[in-house]
Image (cartoon, rainbow over all chains, first blue to last red; front, side, top):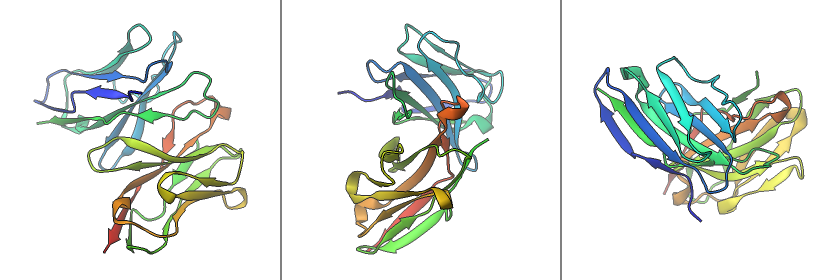
Length: 115
Length: 115
């Protein structure tokens, strides 16, 4: 079946602009995660959604970052007033309901470049 | 907070040689452990996972890993490297005992395979 998909695959923007990154999880997966992969920082957790529960936003680096998940499926990560340090690959992952060990399936990522 | 340490940011082996990528975790209770592989410009692909069912875990592409509680290690091995194994490898831990759903990743090890 289809895996996790993300769009766009690449995004170049100017400092100060807002960007939206999209994630389509695997059908039927109730948990959705966003991670950021950047040089020097490795893979960092950003935010986690599980069904209709309140999201775990503990990894968001600043209030310029926000995310929503509509209808329990597609998620959008929004970065406002982008800064050069936001340049990174943003990875989305999903996991199946009842996954007792939290196996996560990753999308190909969106490479964000802030000029 | 739990952490994962991968010794060696770069490992180079000859084709046909043994591959050994090291991973140590810090957790008072054995967590769930994963190895992911990332090929250039792609997302993360799950290689194998430890879920306490067996200490020696076999994964895809001929890789395996052994969980050693006494050493808090989960090293990844492959008896004979292939050119197609060149990629970056990440060890990750999921410690659901803390209620944290996000994976914590090591800093990654880039594997080079020399002809």
